[in-house]
Length: 104
Image 1 (cartoon, one colour):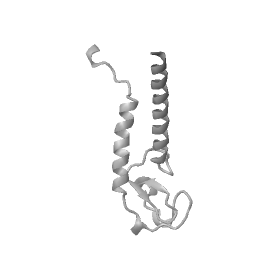
Image 2 (image 1 turned 90 degrees about the vertical axis):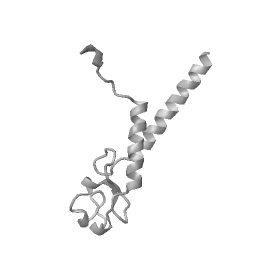
Image 3 (image 1 turned 135 degrees about the horizontal axis):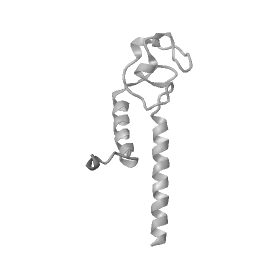
Image 4 (image 1 turned 120 degrees about the horizontal axis):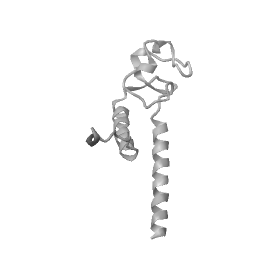
């Protein structure tokens, strides 16, 4: 029985590490939050929230200043869906404590 608990503990630790590594891949290069409406700015391939790319995106990447063209900036809908699914998974694995409504 103790061996089974150790295996489960190890598996949970590995799962948490994998989720943390996956989360890092989904962070905005500018604000470091999970991206919302993710866009790629062109040749540098930095991924940013659309709001972080901002209206001055034509002036270049806000992270590395490489050239970027406003006409090329499009929301990556597939990545946006992955981020939404990840957020759901993360909330299942790390539920926030909810106040007990029965006490009210």
